[in-house]
Image 1 (cartoon, rainbow, N blue to C red):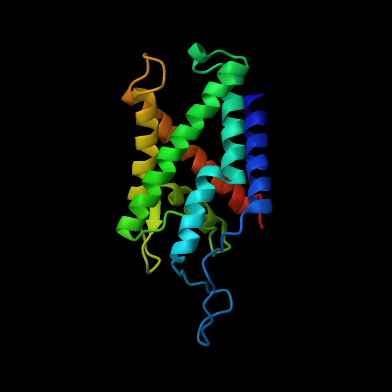
Image 2: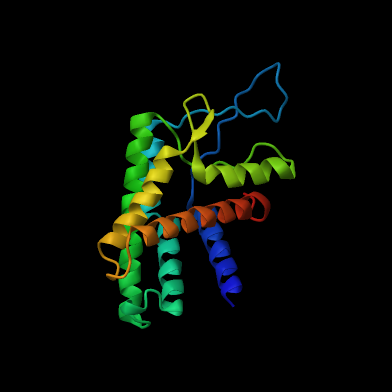
Length: 204
């Protein structure tokens, strides 16, 4: 049952993303000497980067994910101190918004400061190995202005900061930073799974 619910959540997020997202993939750069399928990375302008930041917090996809996450947590009654009814759903929804606000703001701020791009792009290569590699590396890497992949400090710091702050502040007292770190690691794994879904199942 949990597997079915998780699959439904992935499909829901992908459908909403396809319907509302207008973020461009890496911009194709024509070159007389290159093959038609060659795609060069071009760093998005400041307006596009800020739009992605706002959408990451309050856009349709972000809102959908928070509702699905709160519903799943309520169904599992986790944390149990928050209860399994509407009141518990509200607490989990507020918690999800709080964590996402910290994550998105931290990631965006560090992206701007370090001149990196943590946004996810589908693989430009069509072979299975490249798609899997791209999906699994994206949650922990970022792109420089030239398009080179580097360790994704902004997203890593944003993800772990959000989960640890939540565990140490508004979560029940039995939670601590270790639980936050575990939650952040799990979140990165979910991101990788979602990327695989978009690479192989939901294609724009």
